[in-house]
Image 1 (cartoon, rainbow, N blue to C red):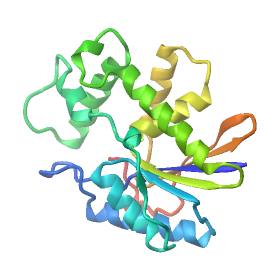
Image 2: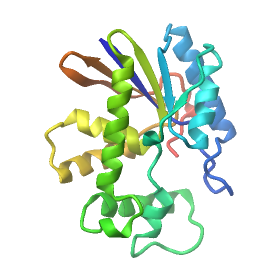
Image 3: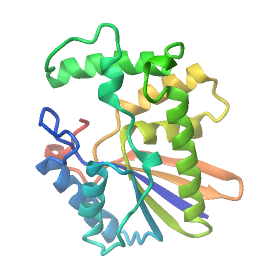
Image 4: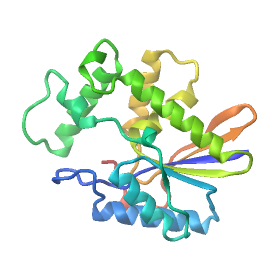
Length: 221
């Protein structure tokens, strides 16, 4: 039986010129996770990451304590264009938003994106996002193989999509979208989600583990 560990990146830099850079807290979250996994004798046979800077920096931070190999890049694990999705919402406000207001608008905009009926308004429609995430998860599961461990560093959107598929493989599009939204909004920065892969396929074992984080290191955005 193989294992896939899905890791959400550390805290990015909300409000900065470049969001895609880990904050100081994000770097520390990655280091804490790396030490926690090392102490539990996790030795990945494969390390994968999305192509975003926050994925690379998180992989670097968490790999250092255990001396893990460099992560291979799979762009299928990239986050969706959340700023583009927000901007496409008809009621998107102009100007900078604080965290609370951005979260409110974000939830409205993503509900519209994954709700269907507006695919031509997005550079990456919801079905295309789901398809590329599924393909990358299948590749990661194959890398895990019998007895292997694949570690994947990604973002909340792709991880939540994988989990929604595993929670209810027979879900219709609307149900999957609701599951995805619920899961996506609670994922903790640098959390670990475990998937076991056996002869009958992949099964979700744990979701959103974060025992390596004390209260001052716990963030969601």
